[in-house]
Each structure stands twice: as structure tokens, then as C-alpha cells.
Image (cartoon, rainbow over all chains, first blue to last red; front, top):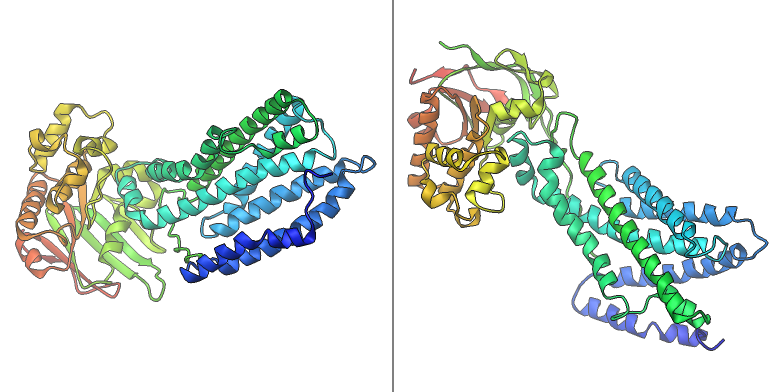
Amino acid sequence: MNEGDVTWIGLVLSLSLVAVAVGVSYRERLGLGREMVVAVLRSAVQLLLVALALQIVVDPGTPLFWSWLWVIGIVLFAAFTVSRRAPQLPGVLQVALTANALTAAVALGLTFGLGIFPVSGRTVVPVAGMIVGNSMKSCIVVVTALAGLVADRRADIEARLALGLPGVDAARPLVRRALRLAISPQIENTKALGIVFLPGAMTGLILAGVDPLDAVLVQLALMWIILGAVVVTTATTALSGTRRLFTADQRLLRLRRAADRAG
Amino acid sequence: MSGALFSFEHVGVAGDERPRLEDVTVVLPDSGITALAGPSGAGKSTLLRCCNRLEAPDAGTVSYRGRDVATVDPLAHRRQVGMVFQEPVLFPGSVADNLRVADPQASDERIAELLQRAALDPAVFAGRDADTLSGGEGQRVCLARTLATDPQVVLMDEPTSALDQDATAQLEALMRQLAGDGIPVLLVTHDEAQLERVADHVLRLRDGHLQGALEHRHE
């Protein structure tokens, strides 16, 4: 195995760029240093635990039930993470959970139904991780943007409400802005595929000896499914979340402003 | 004396530190310009916002021409009870685009008529980017937009507080014109001189409570 071997010393040295980033944060008073250190430590602990757990799950003798249970855990964790970023949005946990669960179910159904990957202990968790992970990133952006826009542009929404527009229509311009902000990176990622970066699944397949064309087809199908999942999850979260911003008689709820999350 | 436009019965609205309105009972007349006066934090805007249900009272009832506003369709109600806010809130696009948010089917002739009612020359303003308007022009566009729903009442929440003298005079003339056309105006203001100039009736508030009975002036 010489394609992906790193020593413990190499692993520690790989943090050198992060150290530079922490230095920049400290010097520029960005307040992100602590968060970066926490992120590094958490990623180390989480991935090492995951490696242990994956060893069990990928064992052909382990029932698939455990993989699916893991997927449920991924969806739950994603929904909690999304809700933590915008707790001031009413019902955000339920909205994010529903959107992520439904989209993950459809996307995984497509991935395995189309035979892109076989259903096995080796594939279920990583594929679910890719789909839900990408959706989660966009969901975080959309709920954060939505909460900020609604708090800052309350007058805009109320001016439309005062003209007799329903709440969802009154908030639509802001929802569009939040959605564009959240989804654009995934669209750009898809556009840059093969030019800026060679995605992991394809690289892994090629390294494992699969024909490059087959690897590309698998990657394309997966990326398209991820793109669709991201857009559907994010849009569902934003639109369902928007409905909950209004009372039954179409009044805009008063959201407290989220404190800056720097540091 | 005309009938009741809005009736408030023991209306209370909770606030963070103290009630924004407490046990307000009053009947506002269905004609002319009624000013809601008082210092900042008196509860004037809250009272106004209860009229078109942007705010709902925590206690008591607000009735519009005899009907409890909590029981009517809020969207239809808001189209009958138009509102102009303190700062002009203009949407992206042209002036005509702004008016069509209120009336998506509005023809060019209808846009021209609405602009004329707000003392704006349609030839100059209909196609103009809303971002380029002065404060006074923007506020008159907001009034024109409000009129696009054919309201029976217009609520105005300190609409001249950010305007210069000329723009204020123009907007006050438009208020009088509306009242003269049979569209009552509810005006929130803390400007005593403005009260003298335009108000037919004055209701004073302080710390969420009424200060005395409704005063009648010009009528």
C-alpha cells in the first residue's frame, strides 16, 4: 500500500498549514483560531472512532442493519448541526431533519437502485456521508442566511405583508437570496469537476484499479445525485423554515438576532 | 360625528420590559385624519400595527367597522387597511415594478393614475429605478403603492420623520386629499406642529396608556 500511507509524524506535520492559518487568525484577530483547533481535534477523534467502527461495519459478516443505523445517526447529527447554527428559526430542527431524511432516502434509493454502487457495508455509510454531508453544508448556509436576512430586513417583509401578500410570498425575495448563497457553491463544484479537482470516489476507484471511464461514469452519477440532493434539501429546509416564520394570521414572528459566531 | 373606524376594547400588548399597550379602550372616527400622538415608546406604532394585524393584541379586541379583526382574513383586511411606514421601503426595480407588487395586473394607465394620486408625474417616475428616488419621492411612491390595493383606510407611521420641509408639506397635502376623498388616515406623529396642521382628531398616548379622551379639532 503506497498510495495512501502516512506516518504519525507525517500526520502531525500535515497540520503545518493549519498552524499558519491559526497564526493568521490570531494576527488579524479573526477569532477563528480556537474554532480551528477544536475542528482539528474533533476531526481526529471522530475519524479515528469512525475508522474503528467502519472496520466492524465493512466486515462482510456484519449485518447491514448496522450500516443503516449509522446512516440514521448521520442524518440526525446533520439536522442537529443545522439547527445549532440558527436556533432562532422556529422548528428548524424538525425542518432540517425532515428535509435531510427524505432527501437522503431518495438519493440513496437512486444510488443503489441504479446500481452505481452495490448495497454493502463498504458503500452505504460513505455514500450516505457524501450525500448528507454536502446537503448539511448548504443547509447551514441557508438557515444562517435566512435568519440574518429576516432579522435585518424585517421592514421589507412587513411592507409586503401590509400590501396583503401572504407571508411566504412576502419573504420570497429574501429566501431566494439565501438559497442562491447556499446552493451556488455546490453548482460551482459540479462545474469545476475534473478541472479544478478530481473527486474522491473517482480517484479511489481508479486507485483501486477500476477502468477510468467506468470510474468517471460512477462519479458523474454520484455528483449529479449529490447536486440534486443538496438543492432539494436546502430548498425544502428554506421553504419549510420560511412558513414557520409566520403565524397563522400571517404575522412575522420576532426573531432575536444571533450573536456573531466568531471565536 | 361619523361611525367607528377602529374600536379598541381593553387592548393590551406585552413588551420585553413593560407592556407596550395596556388596557386601551377607545373608538377612532371613520373620517378625516386621526393623529396618534405621544413621545417615543408611547405605544403609538403598536396601536397602529394592531389596526392591520401586523401586531396582534395579547388582551382585548380590535374591531374594524364593527368586525373583530382577529376573525377576518388578514390578507384581505390588509388590502383594505393600507399602511405607509416610517422609512420608505422600496423594492428592487422600477417605480412601476414597485406598484405592481401590490397590483400585479396593473396596466400602464393604472400605474399612471396611482402615481398622479401621489403627486408624481408618471412620465418621469414610472420607469425610474426605485433606488434613485429621494426620501420624499420614495415615500410618495410607497403611498402610491399602498393605494394600488384600493384601501378604505390608510395608516401612516411617522411618514414624514425623515423628510425635509417641502417633502413633508407635499405628503401632508396628500393626506388631506385622501381624507377629502373619503379615505380616513391614521397618522402616528410626535410632531406637535404637524398635529396642528393636519389632524382632525388627536389621541394621545404615553407609556402604553391613553392620555385623556380623543380630541376633535378641525371637524
